[in-house]
Image (cartoon, rainbow, N blue to C red; front, top):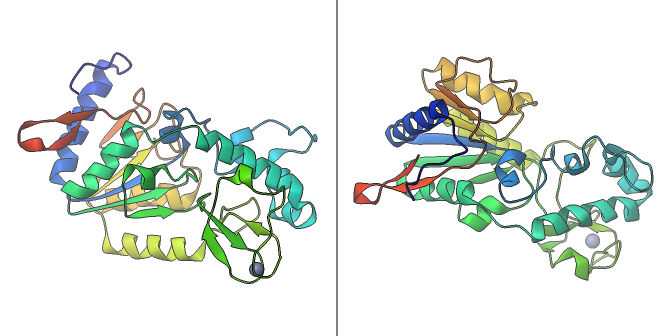
Length: 267
Ligand SMILES: [Zn+2]
């Protein structure tokens, strides 16, 4: 596909092409992705798990932050499960978009591509990416809250309102990060190890960069002389940084371009 994209401004188009060339040159790339990328798949823009309902109250009158809080899950698991199911339903009807697929294809053509995502939809994996760090967990598995049992999750609408562990009958849940919970230790450890190896380029896509673990790598790569870019319709915490380029109108809608030799680029 090499057709002009009417949604891109002339400036963004120029920047996007420059970014594509730079990424082909830089062989170690970190992509940081948030809800804006999956918004192109039709998912609502949300902040982590709870942001699906950001700024709105639930039917019970409880804020979504409260309904999806670990303390509520412990006291009223059926309520938290109701909202987890709603998020899973939204994801179930959607598919990875071109942005996910282009990032996955880059993993094949560049030396090292790592994806750090805040999204729980599993779309990076579905698109074929292997090196994905899911900082807010995922909806793809179920785990026991007591005994350590874990398995691939069946469609959540096939499960009882509050699913139980088949081994010990304790309550089960997907390994998503609820409000009030720490980030998963294994994901943090993997991320830190990847950052320690360093990246020659970092591209932040569709995230508001509210958290230091999201914004810090942009500054770290910049300080080391690498390329930092942001693709987001809104100004964010990293927008004030000295970015190599910033695409305001592109959001996550990468366009795939197969140039001579089958190279993959953005443009
Ligand atoms: Zn169990």
